[in-house]
Length: 82
Image (cartoon, rainbow, N blue to C red; front, side, top):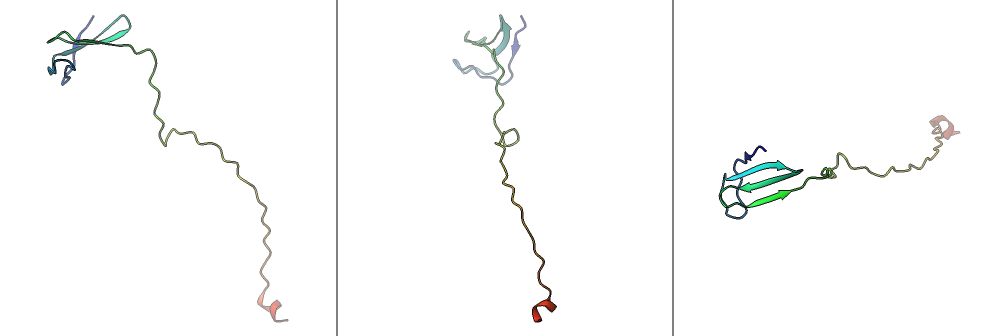
């Protein structure tokens, strides 16, 4: 088992800085303070879910209404004088 110091970490119990180590044992990650003996186990079974953002949000498909438009030509100026 390899214990690694966490730079800048503060113990939640005694508030000692740079006295916390992390190690992995039996499928769990542990955080331990070498100053006061505080130990916290973390179990990471599942993958964290991705947060919803504008880039990955699935918007419902919009059904567009189809309309047929008929354009009639404008009468020419010569036809309006007659």
